[in-house]
Length: 129
Image (cartoon, rainbow, N blue to C red; front, side):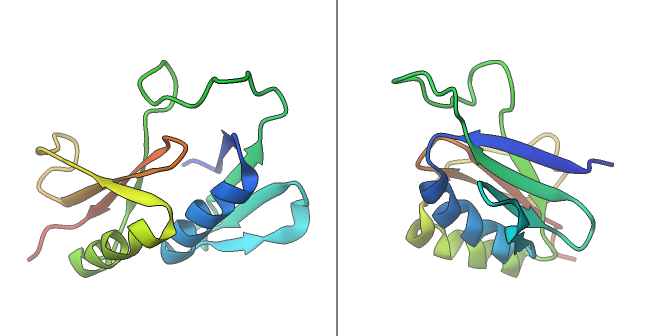
């Protein structure tokens, strides 16, 4: 089981708008005890931390196409929750990406979102019964 994930972002304020909204919708609460780190904890024990990189290379932004993290997949309880998040995403700095099937999700409902810095999340809801 994963304990936490840390993402280095180019702009912490911008990340707080997009990631703060999304993680809040996914049931995470912000832990403000770490000052310069945005930390979001889930009741499951898993946490997501966002830090502004101190070593940013000018002009170099995150790319999920380079070696490293491609995307993070979050499980949702229902298709309705998935539709609700996707429907609100653009107002909070996310863009829905096209999807053409998904080999890992095994029949689940899936959506992809990308924020303004190029980070991608996958939202996975169980198939309707």
